[in-house]
Each structure stands twice: as C-alpha cells, then as structure tokens.
Length: 348
Image: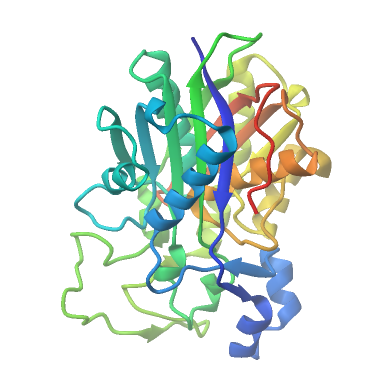
C-alpha cells in the first residue's frame, strides 16, 4: 500500500529576533534593504540551553496529541537535522526515549539541510512501501542560529530555528499515488559555498583557537561559524531548482498546470522570486511563508506546507510539488497528493 502524509505539526521557539534589532547593530545596512532582500522581518531563535531534539520532541508531542494516535503504533523514527545533540549517540535514539516510543522501532538520523525534508520523504516512502514500516514519524529540527556569528550580517537575518513532525502511514490507495516521483541532485563541488568548517572531524577546533576575521563586506565570523557564498548559492539555485521542478512533472507525466501549488524551501525573497519567475507561476500557486520565522532549513518545507493548508491556499486533496535545495550542494523535488482527511489544526 502507498505511503501517505496524514498530518504535520510544528513548533517555534519562544525567543525572537526582529530585523529592527539587527539593523540597530548594523547602522549602515538600512532596515528596508534587509526586508527587501530576505523577505524576513523576524526569526525565532533557540536559547543557549535549547537543542534541536528539544524542539523535535515538542513538535512530535503536538502531532501525537492532535492526531490521537497510539505512540506505540509508530514503528520507525527519522530525525533530520544538521545540528544534532551529539555526533554520537544518534539523536533519533534520544528522541525515541523522550517520546516514550516502543523499543521495537527503527530510528536514524539524516544529516541534510535545506533539501533534507524531500530526501527524508523518499526514505520514508521506501520504508513503508517495502513493508519495513507501517506508521513512521519524520521529525525535522534545526538550530542554525547557533552557527551564526552575531557580527555576520550576511546570514544573521536569514536563519531561524524550528522543528516539524510529519506522520506517514500506509493506507489503501485513493486514486493516484500519494508521494512521488522523486528527482534528486547533488553537487559536492560546491560544498565550500555553504559550510561550517569546524563542525566535524576534518577541521576540529578543540581548543577554541578559531580566530574571528572580518571579510571585505564587513562581516565578522570564524571557522566555527557558518559561511555562505551568497552569489554562488543563488546562481546554483536558479540553475537547478526550476530544472528539478520541470523534471519532476515530466517524470510524473503531468505539466506544471496540473499542480495545485509549489512549496519551495523558504530561502529568501530574492531567491524565491527568481524561481517563481523562471517557472512562470502565479503568486497564488507559489507558497511563500517566512516573513515571521525566517529560513528554518530542513523545517521550512513542512512548515510552509502546513501553514498554506491552514490559510486555505492549499486544500486537503491537493496535488503539491515540494522542492528543497541548499547546503551540500543538494536539491530534491517530489509530488505529494494530500489525503482528503489531512489533519488541519493550528500549530502556533
């Protein structure tokens, strides 16, 4: 039986940071210029003692509460993050215990950023449709704000923290398949364009020796912070994302006119405007949802999808094209037919 997305819930940390606060720190960077380039006026950011697992557990508990499912009926857990609690153990194992899920389940982490939700959906679909799982909990959670140097205006206004929980189950087909086909892409030659240099084993900073430096644009950072070559990432996005969207439709034997809505990774206003223009889509068929939450990395697609359903922009039963892209460099797209009984409830 096909895999179906039954419900999505999400959470945002209480602490926020507005562009007014950022503009006060960078007086030579006008407020409206920040808003125009990013499309973001505020972001939610994790506290010093808050981790991705904390947010993931809250989002999952909301989902369990709203759907009324028996948590012990979940037989697989996927946790998608690039800000794990530890490199070892796997964060999914910690989340299994905190959610009081059964010990019979499989649990794994997927280390992927802005395209992570699409890739995780592909894995979830394969697990369910191959008979390895019947009810799967997919959690995305990221706290990229912890990578951002406060003095780096190039990314300070972009990244927000969040978590989203998606419930997937097997069920009888109602018409066409619910998830897929998929189109993936990877270009590791661009890995250095979006990177936290000391975040793994290749270049460790065990003694806090990473020195801050100021680039020619006045941005302050060290190798412990995230670096993004904005121009290179934008060029990659505008080259690959429209192509992936069209390839997904071709693979499904449909046209973009047959799709009710496109939900892209919420990168920035400038990037999303370029994608929409290249696809020739009207605003009502292109979901933009980041003004008050920012770029929430792996969480941006499920949150935007859920919010679009809540606002009525997307109806239960709609055919939706999801596309993620970013760090890696990596991209992925898929089609999702929401069930007519998709759970609609406010997450905020």
